[in-house]
Length: 126
Image 1 (cartoon, rainbow, N blue to C red):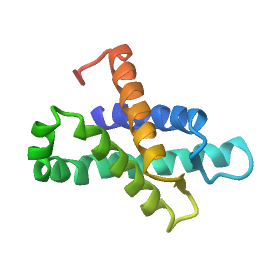
Image 2 (image 1 turned 90 degrees about the vertical axis):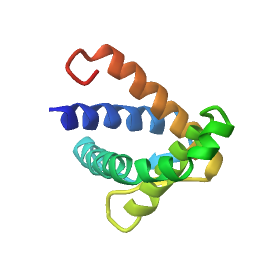
Image 3 (image 1 turned 180 degrees about the vertical axis):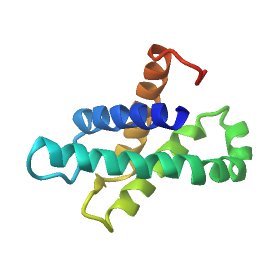
Image 4 (image 1 turned 120 degrees about the vertical axis):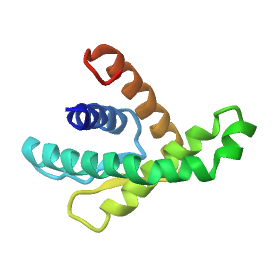
């Protein structure tokens, strides 16, 4: 159940990010069903990247986290978003991330949206 909540929250956060930032967009062309399918695939890939790659990156960059008092997490969020965009470019369901600073802003919005949604959704994920 926890993975389902994580998928839904990440999906909503990615959708919100694509609405707010011009440099981040889904490659869906067509109707609403196609856009939802692209969002679902991108969300699945983003969640898998955050579950598999992010802990390794956090462990390897622990000195930078300490040195910057945690602000390096913005860079890690941006890198995970850019990695998701890079991985999805090989499929028909893609996320386009135009530049590092758009990725930093997108990572910040995704982190804030995920935090707010986790506060609003009751359950055992806390």
